[in-house]
Length: 240
Image (cartoon, rainbow, N blue to C red; front, side, top):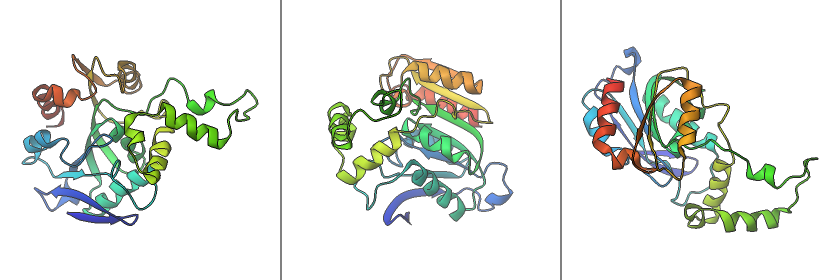
C-alpha cells in the first residue's frame, strides 16, 4: 500500500483482521524498524501475529532519498497519520533501534498499551554539541568546521546518505531520550550482550526507568534476528 507524506510515497502494509478497530481494546500492533530497515524487517514476527492482531508495518524513509530532510517528529507524525487513516487509537509497538526513537515521541500522541524494544537507540552518555562548546556556551568550531568534523567521525550509515538525508540523520541523532524514555505501559526489552551500536547500559537504563522485563542474549545489535526463535516466542507470550 502507498501513502503520500511530505511529498514522498511511503510503502506500508495494514493487515486487518477486524475492521471494527474503534471497538477493540488494542487496535493493532505497529512495527517500527531500525535505520536502513523496512516494513519486512520483522517479517517472521508479523507472520506469527497476523492472525491474532491487526498489523501496521511501515517502510520509514531513512537511507532512501527523500524530497526534503525529515525531523524525528516527521517520522512520528507519519505514523500518526497512518493511525488516523485506519482509525487506530490503542496500539502495541514492536521496535528496533531507530524505531525506539520514533516510539518515544509517538507515545505522546497515541495510547500505547504495550511495547517491545530491541536494541533501542536514543540514549547518550554525552552530547557532541556540548563537547564542542565552551562553558559560556560559545561554539568552539564554526559551522563549516563542525560539518567537516561530523563527516569524519560519522558512521558508514551517515556517509552513504544523500545531502538531504544527511540533514535528516543529523536531526535524528541529535536528540537524546535519557530523560524521556519512560512509558506508562508494560515493556519487554530484548538485547544483545555484545551490541556495539546500542550498548547494554542503554537497556539497563531503560529497564530502570520503566521497570521493564529485560532479556539479554549472546548476540549483537540485531539480537531479534540472531535469536529470532527466542525473540518471537517472548514477543508472542508478552503480547498475547
